[in-house]
Image (cartoon, rainbow, N blue to C red; front, side):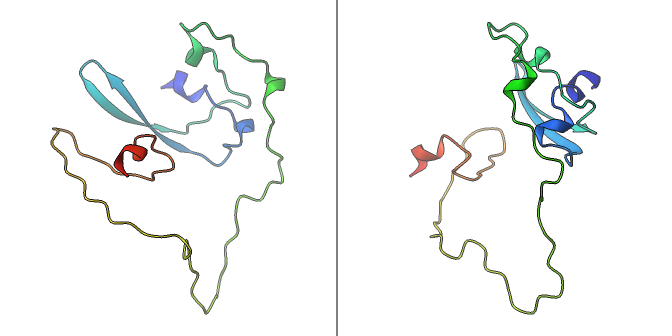
Length: 119
Protein backbone atom coordinates (compact mmCIF):
# COMPACT_ATOMS: atom_id res chain seq x y z
CA UNK A 1 0.00 0.00 0.00
CA UNK A 2 2.99 2.32 -0.20
CA UNK A 3 2.33 3.24 -3.84
CA UNK A 4 -1.30 4.23 -3.13
CA UNK A 5 -0.21 6.66 -0.42
CA UNK A 6 2.03 8.56 -2.85
CA UNK A 7 -0.62 9.53 -5.44
CA UNK A 8 -2.16 12.56 -3.73
CA UNK A 9 -0.27 15.05 -1.62
CA UNK A 10 -1.02 17.31 1.33
CA UNK A 11 -0.91 20.36 -0.94
CA UNK A 12 -3.91 19.08 -2.96
CA UNK A 13 -6.27 20.36 -0.26
CA UNK A 14 -6.42 16.95 1.39
CA UNK A 15 -4.38 17.66 4.52
CA UNK A 16 -7.01 16.38 6.91
CA UNK A 17 -7.86 13.22 4.96
CA UNK A 18 -6.47 10.23 6.80
CA UNK A 19 -8.47 7.30 5.41
CA UNK A 20 -9.80 6.65 1.90
CA UNK A 21 -12.08 3.97 0.55
CA UNK A 22 -11.30 3.07 -3.05
CA UNK A 23 -13.41 0.78 -5.22
CA UNK A 24 -11.85 -1.00 -8.18
CA UNK A 25 -13.30 -3.28 -10.84
CA UNK A 26 -11.35 -6.48 -11.49
CA UNK A 27 -12.02 -9.57 -13.67
CA UNK A 28 -13.24 -11.46 -10.58
CA UNK A 29 -15.51 -8.65 -9.34
CA UNK A 30 -15.54 -5.30 -7.57
CA UNK A 31 -13.26 -4.81 -4.58
CA UNK A 32 -13.41 -2.09 -1.93
CA UNK A 33 -10.18 -1.32 -0.10
CA UNK A 34 -9.34 1.14 2.66
CA UNK A 35 -6.10 3.11 2.57
CA UNK A 36 -5.05 4.25 6.04
CA UNK A 37 -2.82 7.32 6.30
CA UNK A 38 -3.66 8.05 2.67
CA UNK A 39 -1.26 10.96 2.21
CA UNK A 40 2.49 10.32 2.41
CA UNK A 41 4.02 13.19 0.45
CA UNK A 42 3.73 16.94 0.10
CA UNK A 43 2.94 17.13 -3.63
CA UNK A 44 1.85 13.63 -4.63
CA UNK A 45 2.84 11.65 -7.70
CA UNK A 46 0.45 11.24 -10.63
CA UNK A 47 2.83 9.02 -12.65
CA UNK A 48 1.30 5.72 -11.37
CA UNK A 49 -2.22 6.94 -12.19
CA UNK A 50 -1.30 7.92 -15.74
CA UNK A 51 0.91 4.87 -16.40
CA UNK A 52 -0.05 3.20 -19.67
CA UNK A 53 -2.06 6.15 -20.94
CA UNK A 54 -1.03 8.69 -23.54
CA UNK A 55 -1.29 11.49 -20.97
CA UNK A 56 1.85 13.19 -19.65
CA UNK A 57 2.27 13.99 -15.97
CA UNK A 58 1.33 17.68 -15.62
CA UNK A 59 3.79 20.08 -13.98
CA UNK A 60 3.08 21.21 -10.41
CA UNK A 61 2.44 24.81 -11.49
CA UNK A 62 -0.80 23.65 -13.20
CA UNK A 63 -2.43 22.97 -9.81
CA UNK A 64 -3.83 25.81 -7.68
CA UNK A 65 -2.71 24.88 -4.16
CA UNK A 66 -4.94 25.54 -1.17
CA UNK A 67 -3.95 28.25 1.26
CA UNK A 68 -2.60 27.12 4.63
CA UNK A 69 -5.08 29.27 6.54
CA UNK A 70 -8.18 28.01 4.75
CA UNK A 71 -11.21 27.55 7.02
CA UNK A 72 -12.49 23.99 6.60
CA UNK A 73 -15.58 24.51 8.75
CA UNK A 74 -16.86 25.77 12.07
CA UNK A 75 -18.15 24.06 15.18
CA UNK A 76 -21.20 25.70 16.79
CA UNK A 77 -21.58 24.92 20.48
CA UNK A 78 -24.49 25.74 22.76
CA UNK A 79 -27.01 26.65 20.07
CA UNK A 80 -30.57 26.55 21.44
CA UNK A 81 -32.55 26.53 18.18
CA UNK A 82 -32.40 23.80 15.55
CA UNK A 83 -30.46 24.02 12.29
CA UNK A 84 -32.42 23.32 9.09
CA UNK A 85 -30.39 21.61 6.39
CA UNK A 86 -31.71 21.51 2.82
CA UNK A 87 -35.09 22.84 3.96
CA UNK A 88 -35.74 24.41 0.55
CA UNK A 89 -35.07 21.19 -1.38
CA UNK A 90 -37.88 18.94 -2.53
CA UNK A 91 -37.71 15.33 -1.33
CA UNK A 92 -38.57 12.39 -3.57
CA UNK A 93 -39.31 8.76 -2.85
CA UNK A 94 -37.51 6.37 -5.15
CA UNK A 95 -38.31 2.66 -5.24
CA UNK A 96 -35.28 0.61 -6.24
CA UNK A 97 -35.38 -3.10 -7.07
CA UNK A 98 -32.12 -5.03 -7.12
CA UNK A 99 -32.12 -8.07 -9.40
CA UNK A 100 -28.37 -8.56 -9.25
CA UNK A 101 -26.13 -10.54 -6.94
CA UNK A 102 -24.36 -7.49 -5.47
CA UNK A 103 -25.75 -5.04 -2.90
CA UNK A 104 -27.16 -1.84 -4.37
CA UNK A 105 -26.00 1.46 -2.90
CA UNK A 106 -28.17 4.37 -4.08
CA UNK A 107 -26.41 7.66 -3.55
CA UNK A 108 -26.60 11.34 -4.30
CA UNK A 109 -27.92 11.99 -7.82
CA UNK A 110 -25.55 14.92 -8.29
CA UNK A 111 -22.59 12.57 -7.97
CA UNK A 112 -24.11 9.63 -9.84
CA UNK A 113 -24.28 10.06 -13.62
CA UNK A 114 -26.79 7.18 -13.94
CA UNK A 115 -29.32 9.10 -11.85
CA UNK A 116 -30.61 10.88 -14.94
CA UNK A 117 -31.90 7.47 -16.07
CA UNK A 118 -33.84 7.01 -12.82
CA UNK A 119 -35.99 10.11 -13.20
